[in-house]
Image 1: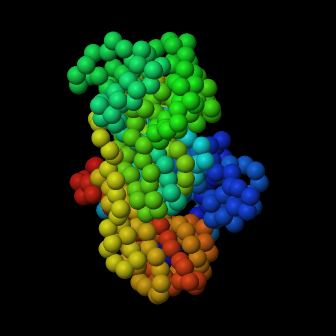
Image 2 (image 1 turned 180 degrees about the vertical axis):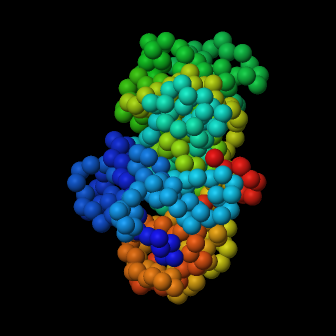
Image 3 (image 1 turned 90 degrees about the horizontal axis):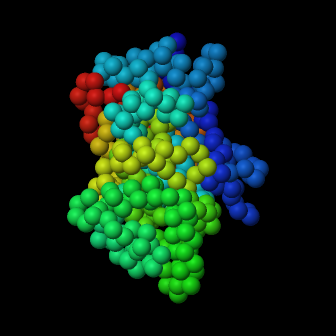
Length: 404
């Protein structure tokens, strides 16, 4: 067993309908990273982690196991003693590239209590018992819906649009208004929802000036006619992120990514509670039950410059944080006594440990075992950049047993 070097990984690609199909003269970003040609399919997600069903392969390890199997065989050398001493037995995060050209579903991720309950009762749709807090760092201009707007902002939109005022009439005022109004979107009859959606679309088509929420509503109605999720757009914050900006999404908060490409990192889970704007399984009753109904903007992060060219995104969950490193010359990068995953976003990089070296081209995914104390990096091109997900380094780390 040689854990004194880095190992190449092969990630898994998802071709969901909402993914990036590219454009004339532009290959989808995920396809670019992997050195693939555009083939007409949407490139939606690149998974990098140990989570089935798309656990990364480790082709340079004898027998080419998947990463989840390899960690089971060598937990301390790969994860590190700090994580294994706290009861962690697998990679606690999942790293992704997500690239969308159409809106994703209206959704939320359950906390640990809800996840355990859902997994026990419906393992086919909720495949694990873990929570799923996540960060999304924009690589391109990125549009997202995330978290509830204030009740006053929602009410102003609903009262301004003639078709929506009667649909939401008769609700109790006060602190429960948001819960009741959002619940009506998913409990009213299908006919009432369809009529409100169609009448709203007709009204907005005749409007000379439209808000961002109204434009997105029209887009979603065209993609998903009569879908309840379209009405929920008026309840959520519409965010525009520039490259380098990030949002952190805790469990039990509604969101939907709309357009653009991000690096995502999340606790190792594939639990998604969907309620609209999708042809997949929806579970609106569960979504309404688990939401917090907090109003306000999500936590927006710009990262902290910890060294020249190094930006760290620390998140309020113990499973991970992220590092983006722009490389302009040789450097020695220390480990943090725990496993890391690297993705080379730009350029070619020479990587070396005392027992190993390799020139990693753009798109390389690498496993950095905890047993490797440092890596020497030397960019081989004018522009070189990586993103590094570091296990067990989030801001709640350090309390034994806090990780799943």
